[in-house]
Image (cartoon, rainbow, N blue to C red):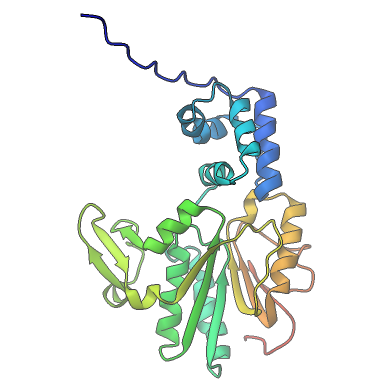
Length: 283
């Protein structure tokens, strides 16, 4: 009996050379502002290896050429999903939420509606933290959270809104009972309740490209994304965010992202919180 021929397994690509790393480095910076510093070669190789080997590319340069020549943009979107860091958690940096509840929400009580923007929503924990907080603080008001991220993968997780019990440990017990429903295995955790999920609308936004919203926001959360940008990109982004704030509106950035010296047209309020002049200032 003749031997059965088996398809040869694709050869794993060798680690990227210095030139190949520079190609990926420039592409990431040009397309979504990610500043990959020297020393990140192993991290880049680890995150892209599945795409390189799975696509049958013999080298990282072949993969790079595929990404830049793909007119559909799907290959670039997959690269962004692989390189983007989506670490987040419920109630992360809680003093921001305390300030929002205690100082900003009272300014909004005379409004008919409130719409805010969560600009780097990642896998959704920050979005749903804001939704629960605002629904609890403003139970009868019309609320809307515009949530965005550059990663399609992260947006998919955020919209599914299912999280393991371990990820939900930091949530107040009252929130879990009112705003979440238990989900059995394999998730074995919680899903955001329909009434809270209805408050958020998701879209993909690349923060290093021009963006536009039909109305300015009274608050924008853009936290823990600018740490991956260089100063020039941060300055450009902060200017765009400031343009999207209404007078008196607040910009919340990550505590590792001081905007001092870059927040032109914004007033410093307290660490990682800035305000656009005008309107009524919070105490």
